[in-house]
Image 1: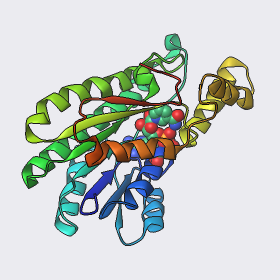
Image 2: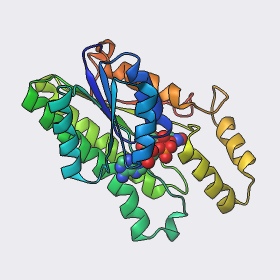
Image 3: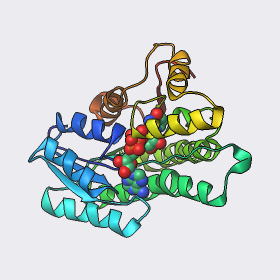
Image 4: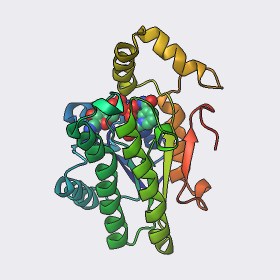
Length: 254
Ligand SMILES: NC(=O)c1ccc[n+]([C@@H]2O[C@H](COP(=O)([O-])OP(=O)(O)OC[C@H]3O[C@@H](n4cnc5c(N)ncnc54)[C@H](O)[C@@H]3O)[C@@H](O)[C@H]2O)c1
């Protein structure tokens, strides 16, 4: 990985930030991207000279293409892409609006499609046997109450990951996904507040319910996910493709 350049989306916070730092310890260069430009710059500054930062909304295909092209010109082709950007909101399924559905699908499903497509085109154009890691979710494996739209958008990520993996395998390109559980991030802070309100519980009780569902007995950290993303991108995972790897502390086991 020492000679490789890595691009991560949604890397200003949470899992993406942890992945940027984990890849930075091993790779040649890390491209830190996020819709939040200040956040992306802060993470890149933490890494230092071997990182660059871009404001990138993953729902924008032209902007995505531009970041790939500029990186190729400035530091060389990208070989590892972690499509991690995601959003959520919480409501009973019967109260969901089209806007709730569209927002979750635009970032979580279409964003992964556009980032992956740009990645594969980039790998093929530069003759790189690249690797893609998508961030799916526990909610991509089992339907999550109050998150039906989010869950559906994350099931889409697994279907996409499997189909793309089959298509690009002849080129030596691998595509896998990580499926995190209850990870302590800004997204979780927002979800805990929503769930507390919707269920008439305290935020502390909501968090405790996450821990109670987790056999390994604690909330997941962003680093727990980042380390598996790094593994999937590494040569140690050279014979793995089309997988959705659960990183949940045992919440989900098949
Ligand atoms: N936190 C969890 O418990 C959990 C569990 C399973 C899966 N996930 C998934 O992990 C990924 C990261 O989640 P997190 O918990 O670190 O969330 P987070 O909200 O803490 O961080 C997500 C980052 O994505 C960025 N982002 C949002 N919309 C974007 C867009 N359109 N384009 C580019 N960047 C955008 C945000 O600015 C933010 O920096 C998401 O795909 C999420 O669905 C999280």
